Image 1 (cartoon, rainbow, N blue to C red):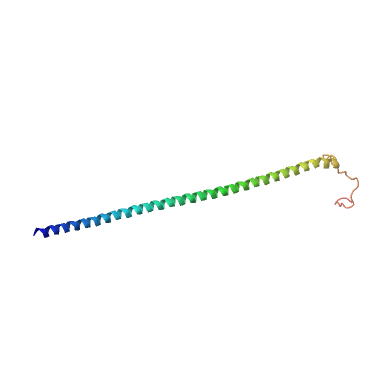
Image 2 (spheres, rainbow, N blue to C red):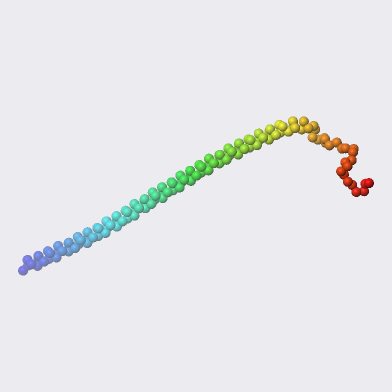
Length: 130
């Protein structure tokens, strides 16, 4: 009668080992799933960082391009302003160069060219004079 008891114990032990193996397998599966989830999360964060870095670089390049464009426009404005000042100075120099000639043709501007007339104009009407 001992044989059935031994067989029963052996079957029960195998059943517990099978359950333990299933539990260990479930535990290992949970660990693996957790590990994979953490790894996937870290990978996504890395891609977000890469995406953020790419966006930052893109924004930086865009800012650099806008700054370069504004700088070029500033230099164009400076060049235009310099040309304007140069033309203005040239016009001023030409005007100053012509001014003495104009005065020399008219005579000395410090002296009056008005000569008073001794005759009275017939068009002047004054009250009190007959």
